[in-house]
Image (cartoon, rainbow, N blue to C red; front, side, top):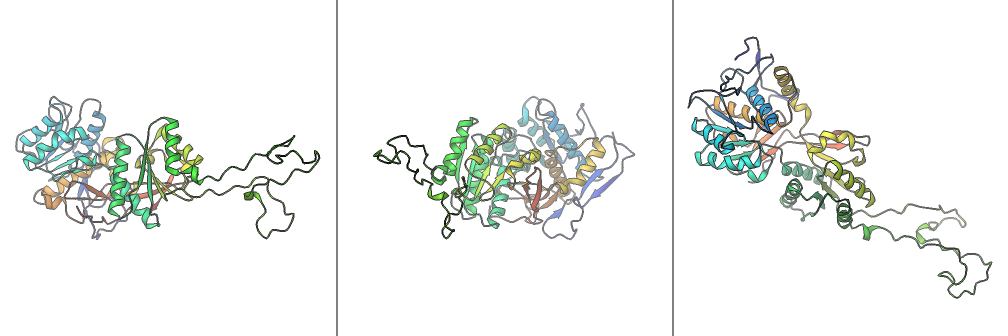
Length: 451
């Protein structure tokens, strides 16, 4: 049911201050309603956003609207409705991937109803079930998973992938002179994805292969793994010999012939002796910190969160690995709790610029009375892109993969012919007191890489 009091306006610019004359990237002409009420997309069968009449639909949306992922699915559906709420936009055809038959049946139903493009599903497992149907039908699919292994010609991975994050950080680190990369990662799917992304980024940049060590959740395994990676045993100066008061034959006087009251000889280790040229009798500090050489890498990728990250930070400190010698880098997941990461001050993570999505957040909040979660951004951009292309004449691979890309709610993105998506991400640096600030802005241009 349409809210007649809602006022809709085009959002040709999503970020204040960005020039409309930008050559690198096309601004999606998006629409959002500033008033309250339900979307202009009709609802049927108790699921808002589903229309009737085979052949009358253009944009198929397959998401979990029931079950354990329903909270994600319904918010993403609302974001897609918002993107297509302008007059003249194509209809949105929504199917529940948690209904009988799952994502495969949802995709079959959307294709049978004549949809020109599929948006979704949410997870990698669902994408692997739906993608072959879309490819065989010759219909493009914009999936919301962040698993880059699902990418293929005709199926684009719209989620923020580990490879996108790592590649952005590697490029930025190279610009500061870093050349030797390593990674200390959890032995799980996410950790291996970050490791694979690092290996590919280094290979593409002509760098030597990074040294990658995976660890379990066990604290001892974390300590041992980082000791090996950081080569601390070869970097740590030898401890000075212990000095005991002699009471007879000893290491100082093995013959035992020294007079009982003889002065104890000077056994100050060389590292604590006065520096060359110092005046005779100059005072020597009782303890002097000995610099520890840097580890065998100048950039280190991490991927842990939670308790394991705390253990990794402790191990980094014990093994003298810090941002004074090494550029530490982590996942975009750190953005959610970077206020607690002061111990990693100087470390980086790559993520979208929050200012880019301010207009979208305001429109979403005005209509749905709550803030959108980050995952909704992908549904909004996908629906806006599909709607824009359909209004301009149709969805084609050439149009989807135009080299200059598109400006979405999280900044510029480009769909590559191989199914991967390149995103312009900002580099955030963690501050000493916690929190982070942008030190390398998100590019307004997307570099074209060979497919």
